[in-house]
Length: 181
Image 1: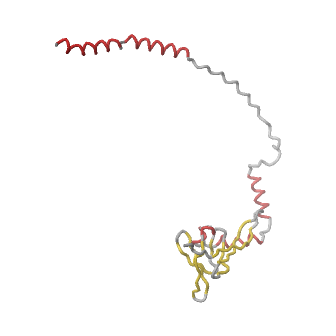
Image 2 (image 1 turned 45 degrees about the vertical axis):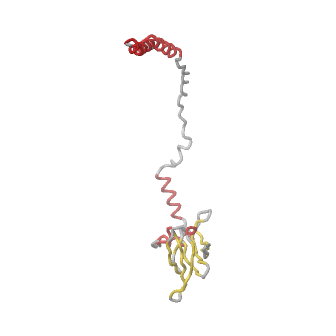
Image 3 (image 1 turned 180 degrees about the vertical axis):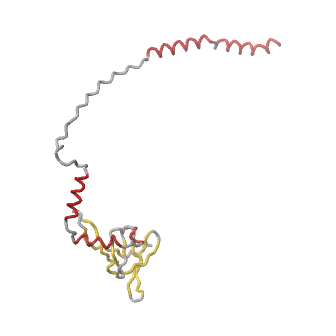
């Protein structure tokens, strides 16, 4: 009976003895051999080309980054007479902006119109807020000024730059938006 109890302990000791240091030594030797065989091969980097400075061919002319160049350009621009188109934008730049000038026209929608004190007014919705607009009010980001209000649309005069950079007037409208149910 005593032999039966000690038999599992004896078997466990034999199994542990079989996993001894001998297989670990073989494993370490194999890993060292593999590490020595796997030396990386790096190709050498080619020599850099020597720097050869180039001479600046236009050294006799005005340096494009000099103060003289900037001064001459500013004098040339100031010598040109102020055109009629700059007269369009000058009053717009001098006045205080209104609240609806912070939004583009495509973000606005006309939702109604009314007449107060004999003057037409339009109801404009922007960002879920309702604004009352009268003749002469400004809206949009292109210096738009309301010139006409009817029951179905608001007409404005905008000042924009054309392809050449000249300030021109153009007409824009906001049409009444019917609510879809």
